[in-house]
Length: 135
Length: 171
Image 1 (cartoon, one colour):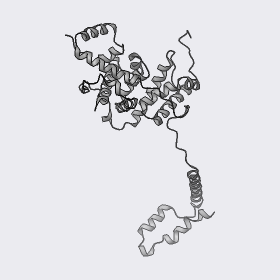
Image 2 (image 1 turned 135 degrees about the horizontal axis):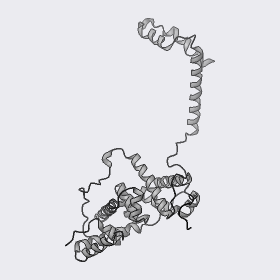
Image 3 (image 1 turned 135 degrees about the vertical axis):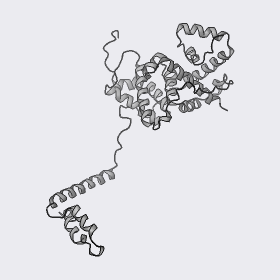
Image 4 (image 1 turned 180 degrees about the horizontal axis):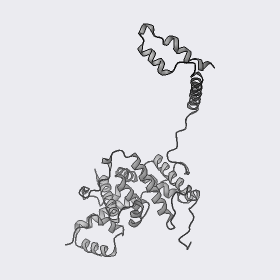
């Protein structure tokens, strides 16, 4: 007897075998109870999926990206704008004060090499930082 | 239409009107929930709208099925983190045979149960089964849509059904 039909069973019930294959499969099926039972079960599952009802969208379908960028809420927008202004202020302040204030590296150098009780940061830092905020 | 060469890409609104339900049903059976189905269907319409997909004259449903599948699988690959999640396409890893008592299967099985079993299938099996049994595509079309050999389509559909059967007959 020929080999059992195996994965060809689905193709058989779907009418998707070539005509030669189909003839051979039907020939085998006529004498093989196991394959006949498999075929019945395969057909039953196939029909269950086929008979699933159509599904209606919950909302009308439109042509939009599947993953839209998250839109910031109003508060988040205001905060972002505020942060941007502060950054601009700081940036312009740093540029304008670049000639008058001490450089960061210099400040760090002074700070890290000084004894704690003689920290020069208290004298030099205010000249460089808050000025730009008050303009 | 008789000439097969030049056919304009269909208008997405027309597609949504005429094939919206078909598209959404395929998307829902692939994705398994309304939220992802909505995203999926809308991404398909977006591709249609932007003319990103070449329209080959023939079956509109076949064309939409192919786009939907591609969008779905792109998303699956994007989400898939570990290569060990990949499809067990190794023929040695045979699906265990289902119990033999399922000829009466159809009588008592609810659509919700079928949907749940479908959702539990490995993605590549579900895609093959949905294209075949929900979208009504031929094995040849499925093979072309997925870019896999016909034998692989056969195998995926059959093994997908075997797993469904096992799920649905489990007491």
